[in-house]
Amino acid sequence: MSSPLTRDWVGIQQFPAATQNKLLEILGKLKEENVSTMTILVMGKGGVGKSSTVNSILGERAVTVSTFQSEGLRPMMCSRSRAGFTLNIIDTPGLVEGGYVNDQALEIIKRFLLNKTIDVLLYVDRLDVYRMDALDRLVIKAITDTFGKAIWRRSLVVLTHAQLSPPDGLNYDDFFAKRSEALRKCIRLGARIKKQEFQESNIPVVLVENSGRCRTNDSAEKILPDGTPWIPNLVREITLIISNGSMPIVVDQKLIEGPNPNNRGKLFIPLILAFQYFFVIRRIQRAIKDDIAKESKPLWELRDLGLADRKF
Ligand code: GDP
Ligand code: MG
Image (cartoon, rainbow, N blue to C red; front, side, top):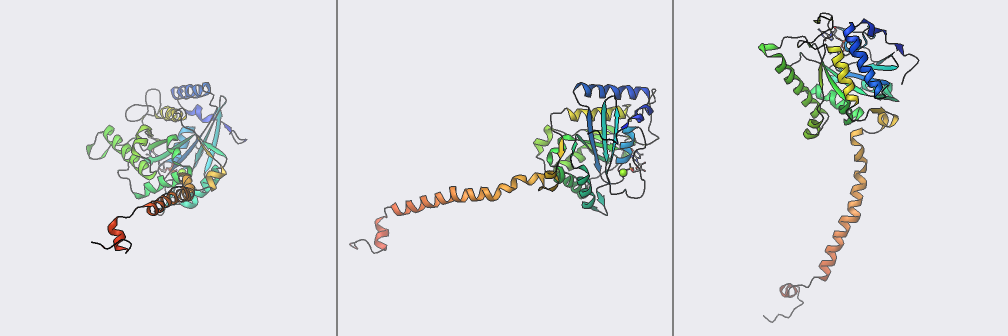
């Protein structure tokens, strides 16, 4: 999907040598698997750190980060190539506005994605949010209705603001585990995925710290509180999704204009009802009628009908 707008991925050189080496190693592995292009779609509510995460992965200020005002309505695709590999990252506007899911934004995103293939969805939210609400579930539902449930097999949850001290003296790992579980549950409910089906393909949750004040290790790599350099970690998790055996999401006209991909089977409902009527219900009715006709009536019934001798 390399386009004339694909630029050389120079941002990679901004990373410390240790990060660069890890990233090049990951890209090398992808090439061995014959993957030479990867398209990542970034979605989530407004202000959660989508654009910042795009910039962090690319190592440059490719998209606008806005602290206060809401973002524009248009998605933006950044394409960068390096050593024969093309990375496309699509940043999108927040899906929530004024307490509702912004259908107009969703519609524009859909049109923008036409004829593109989504390899991975990054669903971005903040780590330092303690509760999920109905709106979160609506955002998940809107994404599911647009791309189908299968999108969640191609997804990674990204939690920004990872450098935090959990409230009430909670242990960091426990806090992260609880937050991840709440989000996974919200996705399962919002996407209406069966519990067992969901557990078999647990969505990975990855931590990110976009702040310029993110702590670094001796090699100057930005690290999470547990010492993990998070940029190569995130990119590695993204590539694991590609090889998890699921199919990428092809955004074609049918997906955009067709019925909700999760409801496609519902088109068959009238056909199934008609089949049931003609081949099942009618047959049963006929069988019952035949039975009634053939039935030898008991004497008392014939007597009541005046057809038997009233000798008794
Ligand atoms: P978007 O609306 O989801 O694209 O969010 P932005 O990337 O524009 O970020 C919104 C605000 O959150 C900006 O002020 C960012 O600097 C800030 N921000 C984003 N990610 C992080 C993060 O991981 N840590 C911290 N401390 N701030 C962040
Ligand atoms: Mg943004």
